[in-house]
Amino acid sequence: MEKRFIFSDLSEAKAVLGMKDEFLKTIQKEFPDCRIASRGDEVIIVGGEPGVSQVETVLRTLRYLYRENTYMTTQHVRYSSSLIKQGKEDLLQSIYGDTVSISARGRLIKPKTAGQKQYVDSIRKNLVTFGIGPAGTGKTYLAVALASYYLKNREVERIILTRPAVEAGEKLGFLPGDLQEKIDPYLRPLYDALADMFGYDQFQKMVTRNIIEVAPLAYMRGRTLEESFIILDEAQNTTKEQMKMFLTRMGNHSRVVVNGDVTQIDLVDRKMSGLIEAQKVLQNVRGLGMVYFTDEDVVRHDMVGRIIRAYEDFYKKE
Image (cartoon, rainbow, N blue to C red):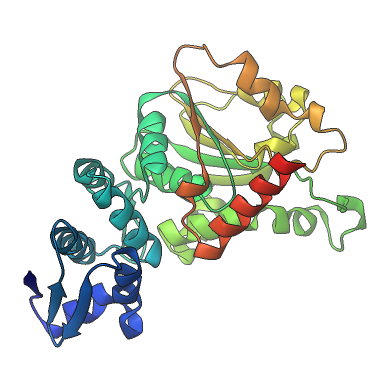
């Protein structure tokens, strides 16, 4: 059978099919039993059922994302294709139909996977949420996006982001500069995410007015953080004592997100990780959610997911 999918204009077709037909080529790889070709503002799909209808559904999904002003990647194409082939189109609608926040450039921030959707829902529902999983799953970015939404809607008065200043093979004392210059490289991912949400100039003004605070974990001791959206990043590098200290800083009308990857612990003794202990101690605490990401939730370049799976397979064999 043959079907024709027609776009509203040529610019929409180019955006949905990707630069140099990158997205179209990815769809073709996902549906090898179909022949897919583009001509101007239309796509011609030839093959049997259900493949042709599934390709049409993928194109419809990508067109929806484009019209929603979503920044699309091949990850959207692959993940959409996977769920549609599994007959989980309703789940796809639930994921892509949820808008977390709007970036400074007007882009809608949406979950990209079922794991991300679960994570976003947990943060909205619970006072404390743990996001645990590999690099590239969007834990930090989505948490910052939600924090910006809560701040813009005046559900919190400020955003506080923190992380332990621990990296493999490095000590702060050996880095050049004063204390602020020493810790800035550790906090850079948080700066970048916030600047994307608010715009760099607005972000700097909010930092000056102490509406946004980005600081190393050591600065949290002895404080009570009220009416705040608090994010602890790289939590796998907290000690048990630091994790307990951080979690007990929470004040009234605050929300806490703790993110980490237990496969990337830089502490001398892995058993000291506060994140590993917290998973065991806090799993049944009311009002606290734990969300676990997998390699299927990786939203960076395709290669990141392949690398994570290769390491997992290697460690299993070892």
